[in-house]
Length: 314
Image (cartoon, rainbow, N blue to C red; front, side, top):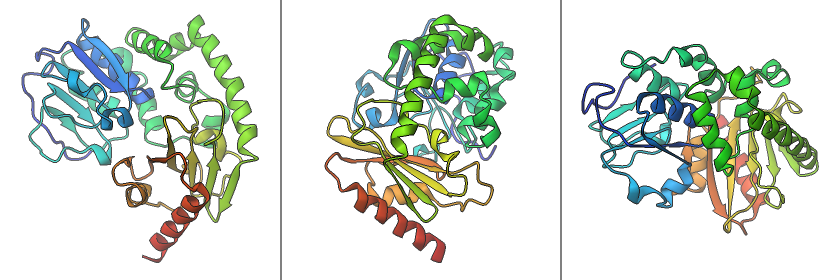
């Protein structure tokens, strides 16, 4: 890992925390599980960057709140993250920010000497691999329990996500995967993913080495992970997914194709910022932005292609 930013408001584990606010993807859920292991009486809240930018949950953040895998909010008690777009403008903030494959890794390293986190030591490297975009085609075709869960997490399923935090704070990925409620959820999600893959084949456009898939009119509000679609297009460098429109907005997810060793290393975050500066966020290789639901997505797709062509020239 690289240079560390932030300071300790107290010795690790000694600072009083009663609220955990974390992202609702796998990395955020594992962050929350580690933090719950340290602060066992804390309440857990899961959200996403778009909601934070919209001002949701912000008023409840105070000096006893720890934030992980999300943007920094001034006034919080502790902060941990690794996203390029979330680096605090000041180096004087409580906690840690650094370049790393996962926020879970940063939280784990911070607290591993003051709390028994041996449970997480066995699989923190796999969290790095998943969140750091280092999944292979073989990994996708033969999903491990942790990857199966990661590809199935739905930000809108609050009950399942809270259950995952509780389970991961106590058990291994294999045991979590075998939990009956989780198993039923995963089976239902796989069926929905197969339907989404069928839909994608009729709503995709190949623009050179960029694959654009338009799910904006899709009826099911489903987690649409890039790994579900790149296995059919192994030679592309990047994929853009327009997700189901919601609240008069459509989110565009941008991802490098990590299963293609020859993929061009486009700076997708800069492209996202050029299209929608106020909503763009994430990493250079995995990020997103939002647009009004009535946007001309075919035009946006061509704009992205043109931007990537300019990167090649530069």
